[in-house]
Length: 536
Image (tube, rainbow, N blue to C red; front, side):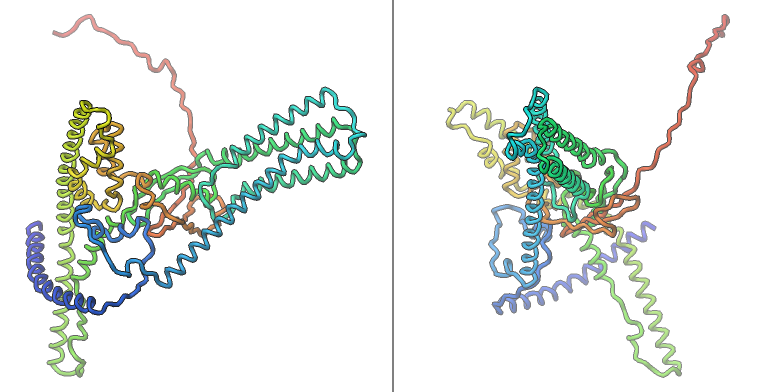
């Protein structure tokens, strides 16, 4: 079986090489003709470009963007098609601007309502205490020692409430959610109704009757502040403590490469769970690299292009149903179609050999270029140590700073690093400027060559790279259930970005039943009996 597969693969490559040579000559002639015609027309055609990828245009173009050497073979690309805009682009940009303006307006509107409600809450107790002195000061009874002690209580409770509200609510927003946070909205409505009810009672029982008992008015204000403190405690329970206990295990899978992570979440709504998953995504998932998917796509396209479909019925014209010649032609056509199908099947079955050798060759190239890179970086860092020893002997004004040292030794490792990044398809994630900054950082902190190479040999999390490579303007939450509803067993929703989507599936953590088994301590005792006579 091995001999047969090897022989078939060899014959396939040899036949393909002869055919591809002739086909290559014809394709080069056609390409030259098309290029001459295109250069002579001098017209610009504005095509609708695809959506802007998450990693920039360089990620989509792959290896064609960056050459093997930065700065040595840099070519200026001219032409208006690089920066042209279509009608669809203008519509998309207008829609993005409208969405951003809508999000900003909603954010500021929510912040304005929160500030107004906060001022109403904090000024209400003070108004309860001040209004009697303004409206009927001559009829108020004198405030004794107990009443003055309540003033101190109100002051400190308001200060504690102010700090607690600032710590819980006035925090920088982490994201803009599509729907309102239900618990926070309920708490705001509860506080508003609570304050309004206190104002109604104050207006009916104190303002209308002009109550003379000022100590009772102060106690009424103290009761309001106490109730507000209890509402703040309820907010801590609903907003912070309720979600701490894990109740669901969510599986997050990236749609392009299938990278998967599992997280435990508590009682959260779908939109809050999506926010928690995105926060974990930027820290745990490796940066999305569309260039790694191009190899499999090109391989599949190559195999599909190599297969031909023959219309067996169309090879022979329609003929009368009678006659021995017609039957022979039909039989010949049927046998030829079966032979072509069998040949295509054998060719398809041998594709695993090609995949195996391609992967083996790629791993060999990666190991080879990695070894060259390690050696080059070690030599560069050794040169840095020699430079540091020489600089210690120089005057203080002639000492080279880490940035200059990084620029001095970078050319010695640049080619090996660029080749390794191109082989592993990471060239779009690291620019020359970012590499020099990282090198200067390692020199400043006296790091080893292994510490410098760790960022390039091992793909890191998404946040490790520049914001231009991973920052998405907007995520879209797609869910059949309402995003304000809580997570349930079997809930599935998608977090869609420009280039990929995160498929999230939730499973409820099962109820665990534990039992106890008692072991008698005496059951572990044993008796060792020694015989007086032993065999020799």
